[in-house]
Image (cartoon, rainbow, N blue to C red; front, side, top):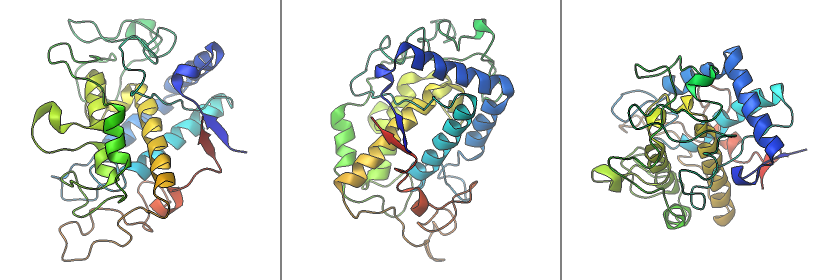
Length: 288
């Protein structure tokens, strides 16, 4: 029977406690840091002349769908009642609303060094030391909303702009694509600064701190962000019946993207699964 992923703002007190406790147990066991390392390893940019699976490519959505599912399976081995909640940033938009409460993820970092000092993932609690990161700090950092150069979270209109595009993705299958649901949701835009950050990318920048870069998994909010993106993929598929993951076939040898993106029926590293097999996981989980 399929289980349910819920809006984080609707979780009961017990559900919040169980989710946090399971995350902390994975961290204690060392399993959580394996997920951080995996994301770092597969954070490949356009400028690198090799296969891209996690970002700046059509497989952004299926890769993260599988990634979240693997984390969820690990959590459920700790506590079978736990599922990964999602954060709907189009309605919970302040730095004090869910999930930024003391009994969930804690709040923003302090002004001096962005160090998170509230909630169960604060370094002072002794349960969340960063071991896999791209900075010199071993404590979780955030800068919700960016104090020095404030930005807003994406709006419902920003999300609708992506959802209404009937095409999943188009050539050249990278961060420069101006059309297609995938990149409009992933959020690589033209221009410089905040105007070029849409949806997913803007959320990462709004959170700031550890959420910037390949080691963003160090902040547990990563999972809530990507669960919400996963829900949008479901909504897009329901709206555009028959629309499929693209490309259906690998780019040819004459293409600059040959060997650099995953086609619909190709295996998606590091797992033995294809984007086609990940398009519909309704038999495993659903969204409330």
